[in-house]
Length: 119
Image (cartoon, rainbow, N blue to C red; front, side):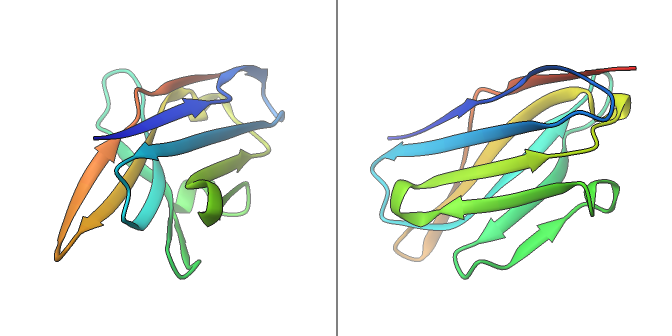
């Protein structure tokens, strides 16, 4: 089994910053990618940012220039530095990991952490 444990959410004023962390543990052989998704009330879950094993990153347009994703491979941990936060960034943020077992890749999710940005 694989567990993803998130931390770092909370309440912040608009313009402020938060840093999310997600640590993967368990039977991990190879992590193909790790990333962050978010889901606001009444909306679908959407990709925020992802980072693959090579270090290449992918960002949603609405966070480019404000959020930075990074990864510590030795700790199987991914971070999301969120700056210049806006009220519309309010959502539950979920960590995702794509973990390979042989030729098959499995998706794992964290329990979610609430981020609330007040205006």
